[in-house]
Length: 110
Image 1 (cartoon, one colour):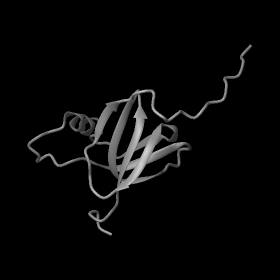
Image 2 (spheres, helix red, strand yellow; image 1 turned 90 degrees about the vertical axis):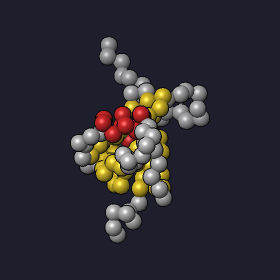
Image 3 (cartoon, helix red, strand yellow; image 1 turned 135 degrees about the vertical axis):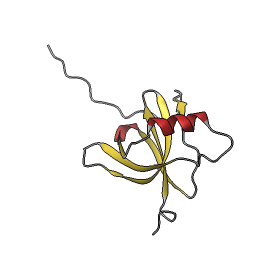
């Protein structure tokens, strides 16, 4: 299977109150417990006349990154897609139908 035939994954996750939507060629469960490894990030071609500022911001933020480790609880969705879309960052909006997994109560330190 060549790189062109390899599947592309759209990974959507939360990071500091923002929703990141990235495209990658490889994802897998990490040896670091509770993390997902995202490798070979894919961005659109720079030959386009119109440049999306959010994609350009992601490109510079992840420039030189070989592998990203994202906590599993931050993952919203992973899709295997046929074609590359636009990577983007958007503000997380509340009031959706997704509820965070409940955490156990903090132990009393008294």
